[in-house]
Length: 75
Image (cartoon, rainbow, N blue to C red; front, side, top):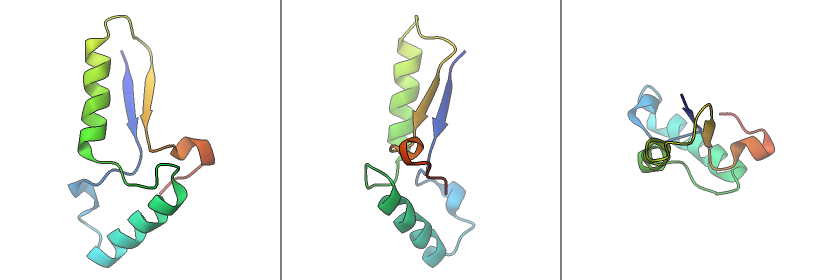
């Protein structure tokens, strides 16, 4: 079994925030992440497809977080 651990990804999960609060959170994330961008659903899907296609990969956590773990960023 493998696990995908996404970082800050632009999804409807953030819809509970006002547009201003959402953009403020995303701006903070962009500034902190080495990739300087917010993740997209496609980024997580690409990781899932890679894991599903690799029959030899098991017991792995795939961090799809724009490099957030490198600098300790959490939203």
